[in-house]
View (cartoon, one colour):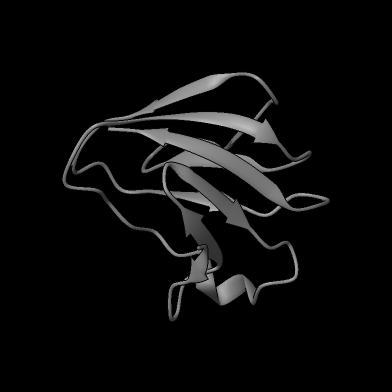
Length: 88
């Protein structure tokens, strides 16, 4: 069962994570993860991924993005909801 994690703009169901476009923009914070991750965009348009010190890049459906461990990053909401698959 998918549950929204308190204070987070997403719902997690196994390796799938869904972000709600209507979430408060303040919930999309800079953060870092303890492990390397590969993130594949399942659906969503106009969303962006930004690494610390870099300009944001558009997240494209079907494309996979590498997020190194302990690197600050954030996502920027797009036009509709976003669904990603996370592999650690």
